[in-house]
Length: 196
Figure (cartoon, rainbow, N blue to C red):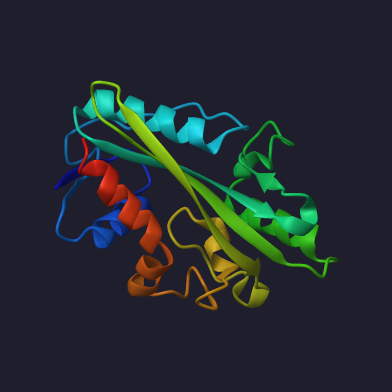
């Protein structure tokens, strides 16, 4: 199978290659394409994922996977939500990784309920404009034990987000544990790609 990853994030591309080790997983650099910047809204993860998948599929001529992920802290009323780097639209300018993580720490330091979750939307599109999407929720809690110990790729919250059913932060997890956490996502993507 052949799948183009519609993303400019090298960490995502690396992880998808590990998730689909027997597939031909392609990046924009593999095809000699320029990086595409798709303007994302602050209301819908699904619409953001679809926009990215369709734009990248048109540019690459390949069946394309794109995603968009929001981060939701229950005690903060769901903030930061869809537009994570702008804290759900609270700020005009995007925060960088250190700013974002420090802001999250400041916002949660006086609350007892540290439960939170990632909600992700995945879209698979082909160059003729057909697109299918689905969403997935990953429950966890904040754990500040590793705060200040750097970031993995562009995933700022991976340092402090502990996945409930594995009891490790995303940064601590092996690729096998990540694959297990995302097993339902992987299954659905395979099913959809095989219909294109």
